[in-house]
Length: 70
Image: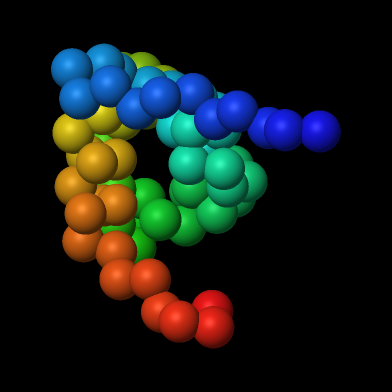
């Protein structure tokens, strides 16, 4: 079985669930990445909904160092 992750588009806006699926991580891991400042989000006043831009996801991936044997 092959799992195909959605492509991350720079100009798009993602919900937390969509971003987690695109990155292949759980929602709790994504929330941790946000809390630790690895992903930038926007939250309109008076709303609980959080938006994550494709640029923010790409920037996090570009700044991520993959360690050998990890």
